[in-house]
Image 1: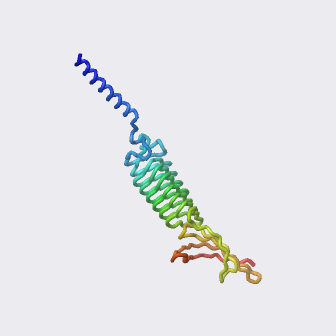
Image 2: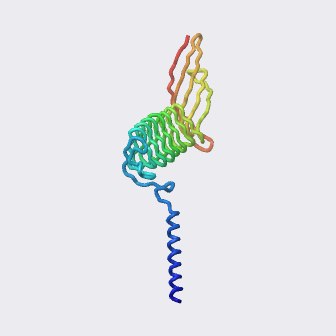
Image 3: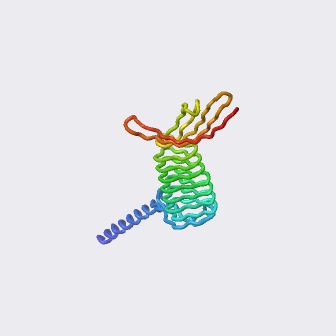
Length: 239
């Protein structure tokens, strides 16, 4: 009878251990499905999303990703190339190249290049496109239109908009070549582009001087600073 009691206790312990193990396994999430985790897949080749090597992998992280039309992957440590559009859901450490649009939703450490639109939330490196959009930029944006929330570096373009601590001013001034000048400075705290137009009336002639240039703000000490600029004008005369 005593032996039966001990066997019953052992059986109860075994059943409890089995139930606990099954419960833990039922609540376990595969690492590849957790947010922020990725599965290493060295090479992806495809045409469009889900018609590629990545289609059977959860959250792939590629070293090389090449897609004929549109590419979709979670992360890239190396090079991502797409004929039309490339989408990376998390981060790129390396180079992202796309014919039309290059989109990385979280972060680019390296170079992002597109034919029209380049976008990332955080950039450390270089962004090139007709239109560049980023959150925080540490490095440079090169394009016709550059938009960023914050820039530590240089936006190089015709229109540069930096939302936090950027330069956006309208200037009215006179020079020895144009009596009246109006212009705008757009860019980061220390580097900006200049768009201006000057007017010089002389007797019956009027000279118009549209111009574009680059400028830099140099802090010297306390409240002292200097601005240096170089401009190119196109002189037009109306009679």
